[in-house]
Length: 326
Image: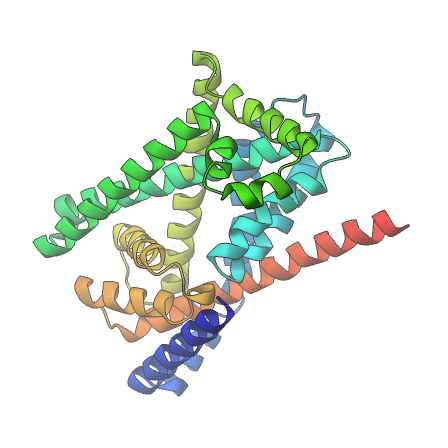
């Protein structure tokens, strides 16, 4: 896994070097500088995004959440999500961190169940974003048919996978995963005490699907994820281009985000989506009739914004660790 990660990292760097060589290093740097103070407006957009994403997490928590606890949930979300800047697997590792951050106020089993469900809701929201991009490409952008067919196939595959995951969550997701562990290992790893905790966690995950009112909460969470991410990321891309004094359409900004999300999801194994993110924006801009070099600028500015929020998240996690030590 480590060797593969290094190989993909080198490939990502080579893609970035190729893009810089193709579009011009000086041109890209000048465009990034031209964004100027607007960069901090772009960064601040995601304060609102984090609040609504935390609301989407809150409705899935089977435990009372006061206003003070909600503020700490926001910090936990920012801290946990800071790991996603590393790679897709870092994003998965960040989920337990959120539950651990809140364990003094929310029972750990409840917290772990909620972050699993929150991640599922986020994945369903991503599927809705893919559907939005497909509708956009058909009705507004008049893009090549083959692109719509590929995206539709990926959307259907995503729906099938998500449907299977949700079904297993309703039946007992962790128990299902453990069933794949060879008996000689599971006997050593899964003690009676651990089995009990696993069962409790499965029951907590099942709870959200136990009644219509609880399922409604899951749907609300999906919608909060969908609108928070779609609006903030679309607005981010639109503002980057706006601050460069280039005429741009909000629908094109939305398509650019969804197209980038689609390609980076397919190539999830690339560390930090290095090169693939910037390349996807350049390809999308070319399809829309814009200068593709602009994609490199958009990708780097978005990466810088992610870096700022990652630093904030790491500071939050470090602060929590220092308080525990005291």
